[in-house]
Amino acid sequence: MMSYLQERFAPQPPFGWLCLVLLLLIPIVWWRAIREHRRPTVRFSSVDAFRSIGASWAVRARFVLPLLRSLAILALIVALARPQSGGEYVDTREGIAIQMVLDISGSMSEEDFVVSGRPVRRLDAVKQVFRDFVAGGDALSGRENDLIGMTTFAMFADTNCPLTLDHGSLIDLLDDTEIPGWVRGRQVREDEEAGYTSIGDAIVLATDDLRRAGTQAVQGVPGAEAAKSRVMILLTDGANNPPPDANVQPPDPVAASKVAAELGIKIYTIGAVGSGRGQRGLFGMMRQGRGVDEASLKAIASATGGKYFRATDTQSLETIYEEIDRLETRRTGERTFRDDIEAAKIAMLCGLGLMMTELLLVSTRFRRIP
Picture 1 (cartoon, one colour):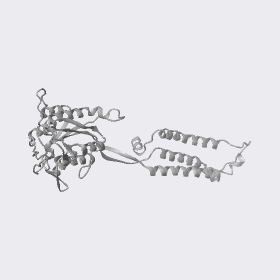
Picture 2 (tube, rainbow, N blue to C red):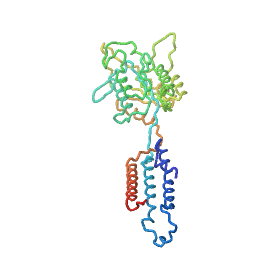
Picture 3 (tube, rainbow, N blue to C red):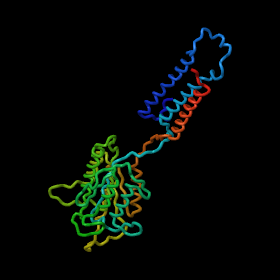
């Protein structure tokens, strides 16, 4: 019985307490009706002469008045108790933390991907699919419930956007992301930073960002919970090629991925090399990548329970993100209820109608003198 009431009504303070108060009025109404029925208004030495007359139907039907008042109170209680409709089970997404790790080295300027029938740079194709992955588009539904951040790397790794639910700002930062030496899709100079691909540094930096997703990302947000699942999506078109440093040993990508695995972070790797030919830059130099190190990317993904993908065109890139979207979508059954405004209105009108009927009867056929 209680479970049935919980599924059909959801009173909230102060209306829940008001419902209890109104419910207590019902026995008071009947107690007053019985008391008035037993209390004479005119005293006689003997009423034997009147007993032979008998009671009229109006006297016998006088119980209708407290009944109408009780029903009116019950109708008001129903209206205040927030009648619920629905109760169906639906699937809801549980948000996760995703760090997008994007290669912006010089080889990402190769125009071997096609978008809308024209050749574009690898970076531009990746940015378009990345945008659809976050905000939704084509076959991708978007990740509105997820904390998403972005890390880029060439000579150095940098966190362009921390983990956030503000996906609009993330997409604005994505649009502004460029290869070193490039401005708004045009190369303006040859930049030394574009000649390196520090994959190991990028994994270490992204791992640290995801490690802190359980605390900093929800700090100061009432009711917020730490991300239960953390994922890294690493996209590159080359191999690990950090700048030489005699004093510092650059991190090995596979070793860095094992650290990420110990922290419960899963890494998906994407090797993005289109089928087109290399293009010449502003200064006539061929921009050729060193080639995707598939063995290392597979080892990185395998160490964390992730998966390696190879993207050769925009369509395959979209398909890869679709698969990741399906793999990293947690769903939990939840029963949803909606306020039944129509039922509340009907109950309120019924209560009003019953009260008006009682007042009408009290003022006419059931009127008492004195």
